[in-house]
Each structure stands twice: as structure tokens, then as C-alpha cells.
Image 1 (cartoon, one colour):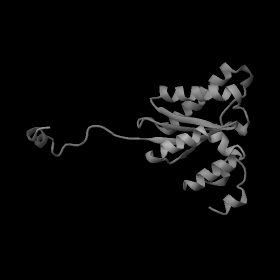
Image 2: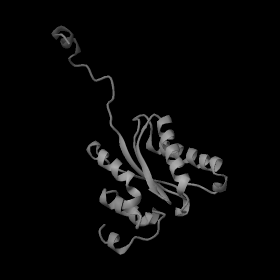
Image 3: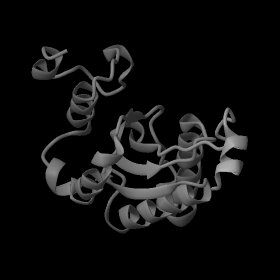
Length: 174
């Protein structure tokens, strides 16, 4: 930009917003039922990625266990996370009912966990999500979720977890 044009811009504010909102989101099936298995799992994760794209986001990784899902996604700043999760859960529940007739009872648990994630950690996290089944196959959802909350400094009230009482090791670390 020339000096003359630059002088004319002094004192003006930036006209655009610049964000890099990367979210690690965890949510479970209703009553932690082990329903996300086999072909359902692969197809559900593909569908979730499509919903995220349709909402203007970018899916960076989706994985989990038979009773819960981890989503790593970059979302638009003009979309409230609660609205994105409402749409993601509602659309995927309906899709499961339509595509897998034997899944008419499929539903997601109310709520979700949103964990902080800096951009510099997102690349390593997407690799972790790809390998998530290997890493957590011997742990239940409750233990993993509470550990993530504690590790990330997320305050919570045990009464509202909907995942049972805390194991003594985690309860003592709070």
C-alpha cells in the first residue's frame, strides 16, 4: 500500500473478524448404551462430518467408543456451540432411525463436554482421535470424561454429570 493510501487508513478499525475456533467435543448415547458399533460407527462418523460441513464448519476428526463420540472441529464464529450440538445430535439421531430401522430407540444424552484446545495442539489431537479406540478401550466413558474435565480445569458439579459417582482417585484430585 502506498504511503498516501496508508495515511488515509490510520485510525480505522479492522472490518473483519479473524478466528480459529477449534473445539474438542464429547457426547454420549442416552444411558451410555453401547449402540455405536461396526458399520453404524463408520457411517455415523461420516454423517456427523457432513452435518458439521453443512453448518459451515470443518471436521478435523471424529472417533470414540460404542457409547460416546469425540469430535474435533473448527466451527464458525457466528454459530453458537449449543446450536451446533443441538443440530448435530438431532440430525444424527433422525438419520440413525432412518438408515438403521433397528435403531429406533437411538438417542444422545442431554448435554456435552467442550474442552479447550489451542491450535498448536489440534494436529496432535486429531491423531489421538484417530487412535482413540486403542487408547481408551479399557476405560469407561465416565472415567474418561471426568478425567478430561479435571485435566482441562473445567469445573463441574457431580450431581449433574449424569454418569454416576466419581471414582475415589478422581474425586480426591478436585
